Length: 112
Length: 112
Image 1 (tube, each protein chain N blue to C red):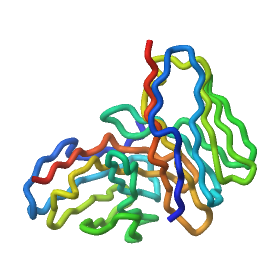
Image 2 (tube, one colour; image 1 turned 180 degrees about the vertical axis):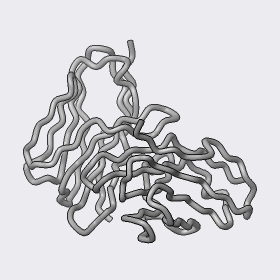
Image 3 (spheres, rainbow over the protein chains, first blue to last red; image 1 turned 90 degrees about the vertical axis):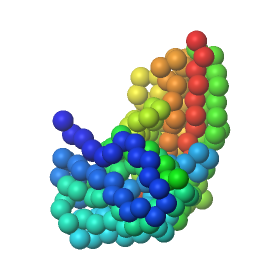
């Protein structure tokens, strides 16, 4: 079954404690992205990757890091989380920019 | 970053009514996608429109791409409670850009 898997689904952490949200896809897609979704602001792109070792900033990259060492994995790293990073995060992958984006089930992050 | 304005932001209607959701931009997109998102889940693709003036139908849902490829609409005929959800439009800018731009969404509630 084609899918994008994110872990964890829910996470509560404290300010400044480094965390990683994992994302894996089994469709051999080249393009992967991270979004955050906030009430009234919609889905905003954090980072995207066009292929292994090729990443670029989206609209709201501050406070986040990503890596793409393998085609299937695209982890999101928060080196020093802050309360304003409390949000619902989605990973997505797609074959090209004009084709369907497959989304993970989301990670609800709370930073206290 | 190109902007997509979606309207209305919220819509509450009775079962059996018709409705239209709009997605507008001042920029041209190579394609436009419509997604539906259920609470606690990631967005799922409904349709992609690529050609200016294109009309696609998915059962009771009709999607149209503007002639100039700057706007799109989603029309639902005889809405059902199962249509309840968040509807998102997303635009692909074109060659050389890998950023999918999302509108803020329309939250639809269909009351039985």
